[in-house]
Image (cartoon, rainbow, N blue to C red):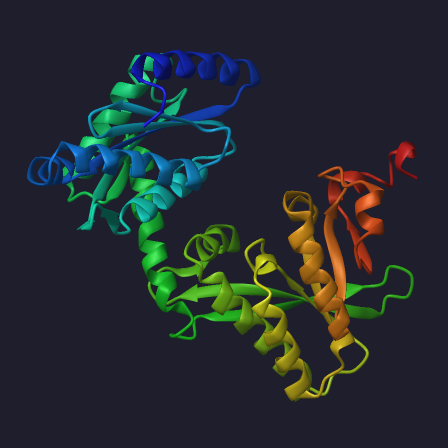
Length: 357
């Protein structure tokens, strides 16, 4: 496969532990075992089996980040070392992404092969502080996933497994939320400090689930992005906001809608916005789209292309959380930004801190 072997892997994990300890960060060991590989290897021959392992390695390399260490642990086992974790959701994202890419059909020497994959995850420092301990615990979690039926992932830590189960329950509910009319919008007023006049509103999506009640946005919005439901739900937000403006015959007030990173990669979204606004008859300048500074830095060229298209329709563009991601003024000069929203961290205690005045 051309991947590092187990000895190199253990050394890399040791280095990652030192770095994570020094920087006070988490890291994860994601342990993969291919389901049904032995049967395919025995029935189709080792030449096919070897080529299959090479294709598995290729798919892992193409689906993961460049700075993630990917290793073959031996046989049909692979390990990924994830450094600089902000939270365990990143490990979940990698596990789901990998399961998705490895369960797609393989075509090897005219054979169509279907694999499954069982995944175990251990987290440093909660699940161990040595390479072998972290590997052993990730291996244990992997066997738990395999025992539960395979094609899934498990955390070593039981409390994390409970969190995962709760997350999967929410994900299941989320798939029917739009169809069951469980989403609604709240319009948060934007008020001028000088005049006290309401100058605009921000459309905030809320979810009232029949089973679990009100679900906070920080729980369901990441799930919308991971499940790709953000596309259909994002169009729903635009439709609802435009219809609200039209029905209430609102004039000269801007309604702001937040955009996710995935939506900024989807140029068909621009056509949807254009058609929705034109059919409603509202002024396109009443719709404003907000992006975050972190999104701007992450993929500048794609974001600029979408924003230019939105601006050509007549919509306004706002940059949110400005000042937290160190966006250069050069970036701002190359974008159709109409409004900059300064992050609250920069103006906190502005009334008592002379340096901020």
